[in-house]
Length: 429
Image (cartoon, rainbow, N blue to C red; front, top):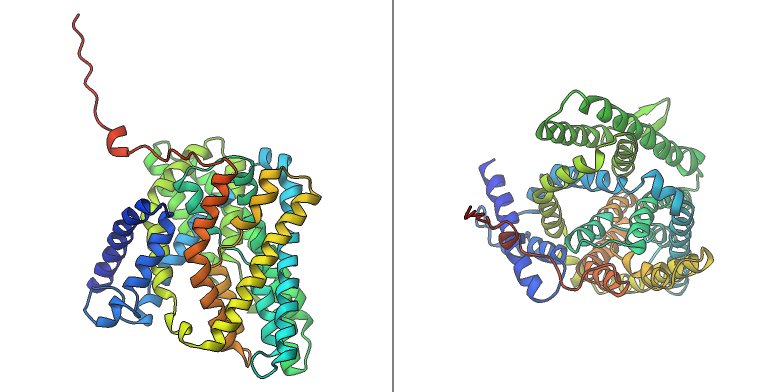
């Protein structure tokens, strides 16, 4: 256990130190955390086999998955805070329309490109794998987006719409993947399962929203028993951890697989809580401060999880590059078209698509499910390669888009060291 503590400390310190360099290069801190994870991972420093110097094996990294899932739960809880009724009345319908449209357009475009590749070279990529990759392409990473918004204190119409669209994207992506994976499985087995394609995905979304709503209500009821800020923050942290744990449960009832989406459950918890608790904003700010080290660990461990061996495979590189180009085109075209139709401002129309490019945890989870396909290894490797590319350049592109839209202060942040310097007030009277 002591080695895991040393590894976690090295991950935090490595990420923080590299973030100083990223600031000099004008890169988001998220990029520095991911690079630190890659450097400390089993394909670089970890490969030396020195205990405590990075992660020596992929199994060691996977043992820390509870840390990344907990961090993702807090990130989703924070994003749920964006779904306040005031916000939803103002741009709820627009966010839903854009969220659905850009995800569907991306899936259709990636499907078309990869199916064409299958027709031209059937020995390289199977039809089930092509269809599954198209659905995975719809997923957008909320964590990287949120970290960029936080770091640069971005605020404005684009930022607020972006947070809503990213949250909606998870539900839409889940439905698209479940349907596409069901079709892919049917193509391989010759048996169409209505239960797997329609019933179970819808049930997962409904149950996730119901569990999240219940936990949000219980959090509000429980926190009223406490009055000090520290205790109210503690009960909030405990509830998010409990919610993450409950969302990981899986069981079967009457032949129907029952599971939950961690992101949807925690988002709904945050949404309900922020709309019924009058002091939720102050409490959310305190929780955000507490979770900063956890978020750094999330990205460092995510970087360490990236399998660099996929770069050595020319087939993976070729399909991966095609996938990245098609997905990027789908996100840009889908966001641009849906923004035009819903009459968004020029700044939102031109920049929203770029902010939707990051892809990480959700896509990797889908790829893990798709590994049961005959061509599942290719699907996994292509997604791993795309995540490596998107996570390294995505945060910088998001920052540039928000800067172009005028929602980031170019002057940057003030130093906490200067800001917190004690002042002496001396009276001469």
